[in-house]
Length: 189
Image (cartoon, rainbow, N blue to C red; front, side, top):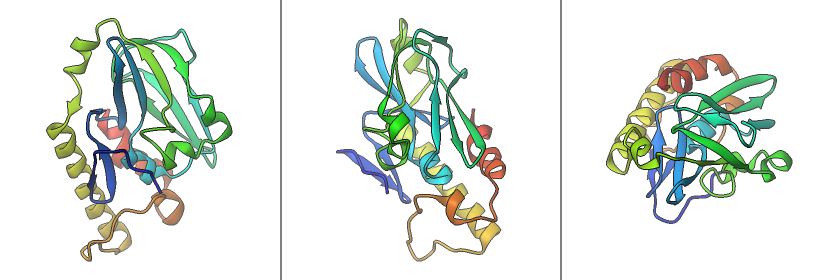
């Protein structure tokens, strides 16, 4: 299960930390200093896809624009790609994820970060991302849509106040990887 961050809000079983920016492609961004950011995969995508076998970030020194592939995750021969939320140059990748890719799920907002970028126009780029209320509203909508989808597809109901598990793909074998990506990840970017 994902370790929450101090000040995180829990939305239908999904953690959303205060002070983080969110991109609709399910990447998050945390400003570290005036032009450097840390980026990773949000808890929603983490719970949906479960623990990856491998994570492949863009190489250090690569320039990215919003929407460009920033990192990929692999599980059971399946691929999911996640977009860059901002313009920047990759300055660092999380080497711990090579040895422990499960950190992406266990600690998505802390030790499970994927890479760092240097962003020359960070202030301008942040305007295109969700923050605080808009991020919470977006995540609430995605969680509600997911619960509706799960009820329709599996007959499982969350009316009892149950919370989202940590590996929907792994625990619901009738839901294909590609269907989950199409419904909840790729459609957002």
